[in-house]
Image 1 (spheres, rainbow over the protein chains, first blue to last red):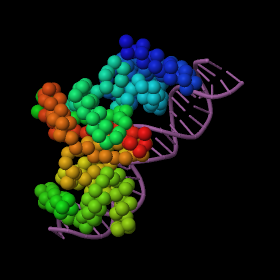
Image 2: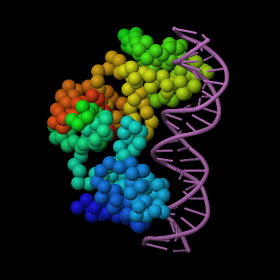
Image 3: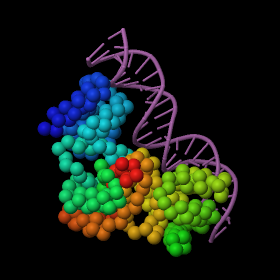
Image 4: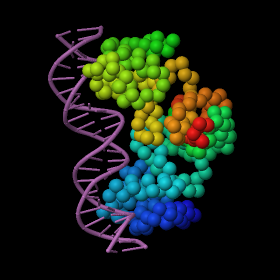
Amino acid sequence: MAFAEGERMLIEHIAKKELRNSSSRSAILAEFLKADKHLTSEDLYKIISTKIPTIGIATVYRSLHLFCECGIARELKMKDGISRYEPLLGHEHHDHLVCRKCGKFIEIIDEELEEIQKKIADKHGFDLNNHKMELYGLCSECS
Amino acid sequence: MAFAEGERMLIEHIAKKELRNSSSRSAILAEFLKADKHLTSEDLYKIISTKIPTIGIATVYRSLHLFCECGIARELKMKDGISRYEPLLGHEHHDHLVCRKCGKFIEIIDEELEEIQKKIADKHGFDLNNHKMELYGLCSECS
DNA sequence: TTATCTGCAAAGCCTTTGCACTTAG
DNA sequence: CTAAGTGCAAAGGCTTTGCAGATAA
């Protein structure tokens, strides 16, 4: 279960860095994992606010950064300049298909693609450890 | 030659949109194409400033947007949140290999990759018209 | 107790916009 | 002359940071 795993990863990270457990952070993590999709800091802030009305958006940002550090989340800078954060747990390494009209976001997992990426990196002597691919177009409903 | 082509594209766009020719804009275009690499607005602003000291960065931004509109340039939002603009002329459709350490930027052109992207889009009923891929890792000199 | 965590507001940073002036057509 | 282009400074929008009070250990 993603939640338990995420919680474990966060706790480990906190232990390693000698940070502290906090109820706000746990709540933010829980909501983030529950949503299980790409969220902006604002999205997450709104969700948390319904549970913890006094929370500040700075805490959301600080938590998201922490989640990225310990591998629970990944930050994506999209075309609109707004960062989105996506959970990595239970999602294999993937890319995105984005509809230019309705904004639909589809996760792609493709073996063949991964292989080619690796091949390209090798050819240029790169030691690959991350990548980002976004395909933009019109989805079947919008075209 | 990229410059002549870029100038032609800009002029056509200007004609179509009933805009006007301006010396600043031409100078910005010339420097942009001369650099022939990824530039931030700040980079380009500095370059132009040496030729036209009175120019404002707003004009650089406005020009870059125009170049993107007419297909001379493309805007890339990178991990650091700063937009970079790259010339499209004389460069086939390509992706990027980025070194996480030294920032080296390599353009990739790969037929096979393009095909797979198309295949993936088809599978999901998407009509693809754009994509962005960045592979992050360590280059041979940095690893 | 002590260092971390938090909310708040202020500051940062890149980018855009309003305005009055300039300039192309 | 008219509408687009420009520089400047101010405003925007997202994100980060400083600070004093709250909280975990």
